[in-house]
Image (tube, rainbow, N blue to C red; front, side, top):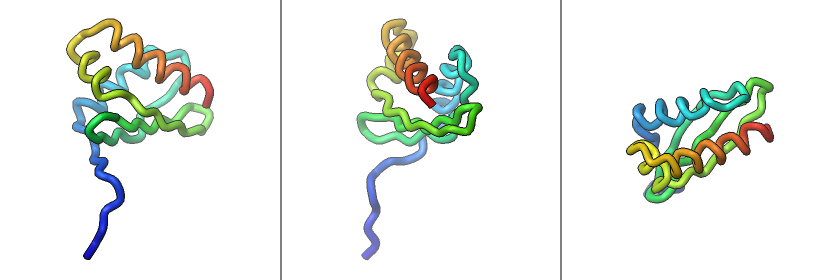
Length: 88
């Protein structure tokens, strides 16, 4: 019997585009490589212009609220992506 490791699946294209759009506002030149989703987290893999790769764990709750226009949730996501993108 084959076993699977984890239950993550690829996020819908709409979600990938939304998260990629958040990176446009950041001062670093980064791009989204992949977005995986499970029940509570979006795992976003981002490549920076200098060749570094970082993994971000974004709250599904914050992502959902951001897509509906919640400015507080949107600021939280941008801060998280920005903090890590600048470190890579």
